[in-house]
Length: 266
Image (cartoon, rainbow, N blue to C red; front, side, top):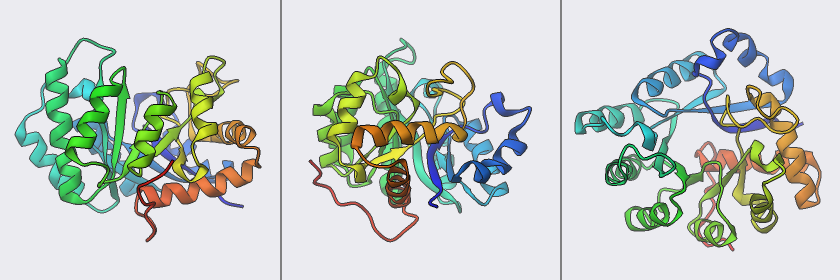
């Protein structure tokens, strides 16, 4: 049986301090084969790489979340460039824009988003994009700065079909997690029904966004079968079929196999 690939996790978060090693070593028994742990700050990029060095099935992404860009410097960008070249670093992320909060200012977020997209181009790495309440600016910057040439994933995709089409046509993947099981996720369900299965990947964003019936609890990769089941119901196929295809997609996304999905989706 194919094992699930969790494309976006934060196992270095303090929520896992009490049982991190036990949980991670038990993932395979719950059908989880690989995990990409995602950096969100300079410090979490360091702890993310420590996890990747310790566990054979964990890979790393390095980048600074838009909410953490207020104090970034060019020296930090140089440091990130060095980290991105290290073994088992498979992406730049999570980077992007988050207008839900007033700080850092939008101009600051945009500046460092552009700089980190440049790092991805330099290193020929895919990007993990965070976009919250910033659909127009995120898309415009990605089109201007890389036009989809780096490839990547729109993490926790939360926009509608029109925006999904834009990203699919640039060859991006859409990250699908526990939100799909929420009662108020009608827009996301419409996107999942619309998007081709070979453009979707599974993710947790753990310890956040646990699927129903565990909403509000600490999330982990062990909950991904619930997301696969919900996705399978929307697609009219088996959960096993979803797991098999999304795992293959994840390998392609993170360049862990030779094939890269071409631009020009639906």
